[in-house]
Image (tube, rainbow, N blue to C red):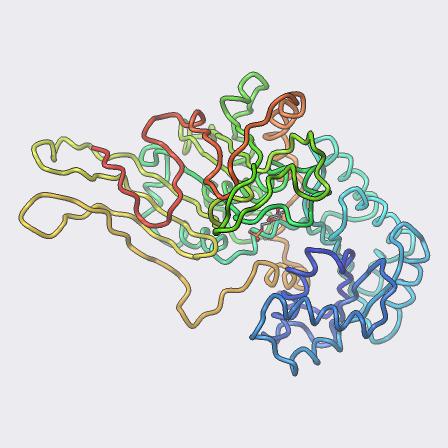
Length: 496
Ligand code: BG6
């Protein structure tokens, strides 16, 4: 599939996502020479800015992100694609004037509308676009990229889906989960399905449990208004972490084709054992960060952050245990957790294998016998490591853990963020890394009972000091030997 030139219209172009992710990603595509000739990027904003002001804003966004790598000559080429469209999203003039702009000959007839706006506005923006014939495909394709969260819970996701399907066909909808654009995440598929030696072990007979941790050392920053209505479960677990889980546990799809991949992911989601309301506390844990110290600096607790009500019970940390009740995974616990203001920012998938029988070593001096782990580091360190037990050199029979490193990036190969790939896939019409509605729907079905229970229990929410590894939630683990891994390097637990 080749990328085709289009008019990329960004709703929410002056917002946080555009600043830190989208504009830098478009610029990277320019650097890589990947943006098709003629592609235009239209920034929609409520601020009455001139074109000059917009260019200097975008320049600032890119410079803030890439610092010394900024190249003025490339930026000038990039700037020629940029156009600012001022308007109020609630008003029809905003869309009729957009339609007139896009009719000008310099704007390609294919259009992609990227909705990086409050989810409550998705439906009305689409209605306006449709009423102004902006989804009319007579002279070129029209695609809509929808940022998460897709809905607030199952009911609202279904209502939103019903509404947008009045205006668009499923082929026109690109529900984005930017985790699917990350290099190591895509490498999970290659690692699993291009290497034959792990596949026979990738099941309940050999795997003890799976952990997925996404921790962030930063807090909610200036996103208080959004975050307080969302919380960690909706913001990260229902979407990004659940997607990671499907990729690690799904059956091999018949091809990389969009529906083949999505079919397998949905099968995993459908196989997840429902969590009844009575079982919520055994399966999920929430907490909020209290004041603490991060990287040597004293920081506020969640309740002291801007735009957070003093009695907020919104969780900034959420963890849960799931079971995928199919032939491959029955009985293997999957632990997922995420938190803001934790000790370190990192995303890691850790697969813990069962302990080998230790009978053989019973009369030896072995004091460190860890199970094998496969560590898939997603960020900041991108790596694939297999931890093995080896003998320590010397006369005694002692072991240590050594790690086989199958990292896929060489030091001279630059890491890019996730959005570049996804923005380009929209131009190619490749939906394999975007979500089909049933994926979103089943993910909501899994977390809805937890969210409902939490919403009804308003008296108490646990806290953890900012800068720590989160609250004490070990009650989620099935066995004493299971605990959160915090490091990519082998941890010796002296288990025998
Ligand atoms: C976003 C969440 O979807 O993902 C943020 O809304 C979170 O709260 C972010 O910080 C994490 O993404 P990344 O790519 O920085 O790991």
